[in-house]
Length: 468
Image 1 (cartoon, rainbow, N blue to C red):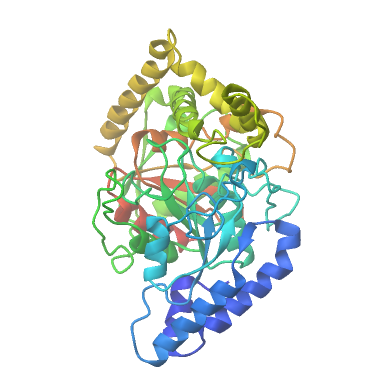
Image 2: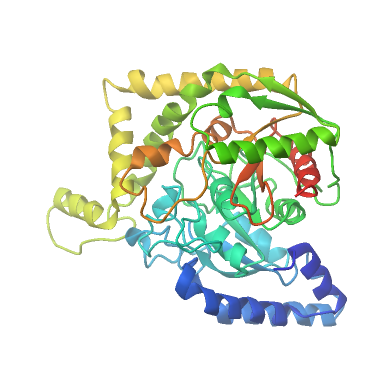
């Protein structure tokens, strides 16, 4: 797959057409989908119609936008008007939203073409894309392996050429994890820099939409298109900036390695590849320091309590009356509610609702939820202290390489532990970008920045990308 920024330039210059690009992408999807299952819905005719519209604009010398003619995969938890948005769940299997999410509007306004809705773990709960009601997605690098999750469909589609770029959502690493497992770039921006309007909520204080791309330049370009202040999302905070035009390799920086993220539980091969990458940066002029964030050991349990508590609240609306699947039986309300949710949700969603409801229940709120919020504040202070000494932090993205499909699905605790390196970033709301340690290697290295430091981490990642 040619980089999106190059493809859109070729379309604008007349070296190719948007219709040709979309037709090639659809051919890839038709060839690969029976094996990979990256998409839940493909909008072939709508995409071709939009491509022809872009070509007509170019013929008239009108500006088609920053993403003109580029096929974009959209995670199926992001609302698309009159196109199914299922969240990978039986509960929403026939749901068609009446409006586009903010990010979908921005993609369309920039000339991007929504080619389909990508598979994901049910309600974004998972790190392998195996809990989807529509079946597991497989890793295009090796179809016996998981692609990571929960935005595994988005990553797989970009990897095999079924989209030039794709959007995912990152609550505890769900953009960075599949990007790492599929050897791609994944950006989780500062909380609030991208509107969540139209993203089906999992854990509202942690959710953030981000791009998955083949390279850092495309990540910067996509981020510029989809970020910005949205009056429909009071948590959106940032006006649009020009990260793509300002992108330049930056090597003379001070990088901190949190020792707690490089110690226990990291696969030796992963650790060596990350260390080699850090040595390359040092050779280019980077100053490397070891730093300590003592409360990191509490980040994962605190994250689990907060995310599951918010999930139990957000998913209460799916009762078969107001939203979603219903049994259709004419029983009393309590019976309908119980049966609807028992039949509509999968095991992982039920597990998180039960644990979250328990943490919020009378008598346990202070013991669990309030304590988790205090840990969150402590983490913010310790990260802030670290950022006073360094330009950015650096760590592996995932503690291990992708494993076989089905290998860990019955061991949820092991899967939760896999998020340990990503969830601290969501807890403090900072930006982070993952890039592959080398070409086609499913090992990611993540660069974590202080709030609003997207340009800094993109520039460091750009320099790192050139040493692959």
